[in-house]
Image (cartoon, rainbow, N blue to C red; front, side):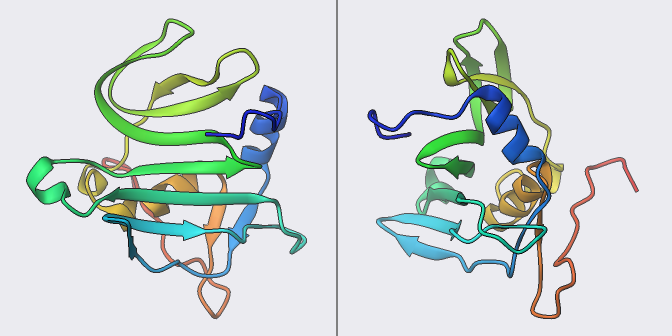
Length: 161
């Protein structure tokens, strides 16, 4: 969450940041930090090669196998989670929306990140940290490049070709 003295973006600004075509230069490695498995990138570029000020942070507890936790992925701008994908049995948002299972938090002027909608990752990616990172990048208009500047891979939702 953002620092209390840092103003969050407007909803229009958050939506524009998500819609902006972006890229990261390579797939970050999975690291173990404070008992969490984490994939984080802090250098996201726009199509002109300028830094956007956005970061993507995906994490899940190392103990997920015994506890059944699922990954969480956030798109962060100036300390504010302007988008976040995670899973809960039932999530009631401040705007009255109720979502079961996978959902995406959206930034809103009034409710900050307490507005949401359903999210359907490909079934094979439901508990895979790297797969959820890649899927979130696609959802948020961010291409993952390889060292040869080719898209790393594309995740196709179940039932589509």
